[in-house]
Image (cartoon, rainbow, N blue to C red; front, side, top):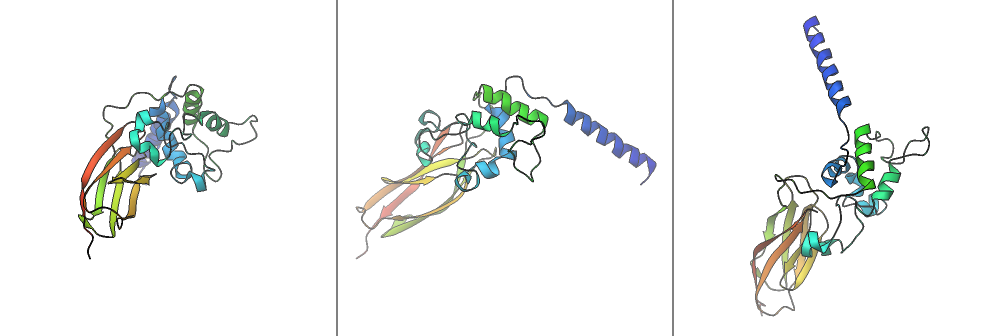
Length: 228
């Protein structure tokens, strides 16, 4: 490698190191600062799959309330413990009483959190505030992959829950008076039993929540006609 290029690479490395070292935890962090850390370091175990991969501790959402998520809260249940309620356990998991003992989270072989990361989490856990939704944050959306316009004994529905900002999403899909819970982002497929429904039109709608607010969409109408 030419000497000039070596010098350039070394200089870039020093500059990047300086930038990394200069990053500090906010004095009074809110969920806006904490959530990206948890998303990158913890949500693969303590997100939607927490029941099987995270000991039941799910903290990809700040909290789960009717006030914030509207009817979408039914996907997980009102007041299901989330990050705000689990803040003490979270703080305990990333700290240790002994300098020679590594904190239990993140578990090996994952690397431990950077200093600014664990300091941000600890400061927030002491006073777990939500903070204000960013002006550039967008609401979650839904992509309809399959939705029958007519139904006899059943109808198939296939949708995908998405969020451009990478926020977690939950939702409740309604077809007439039937509800279907969606407890995570990504694809969702279901078959609604329409065999006992009275003939006529049924509205199909959904309410979604990204933990910051809820949004409702009308997806269409299905006509139930029982063939003889």
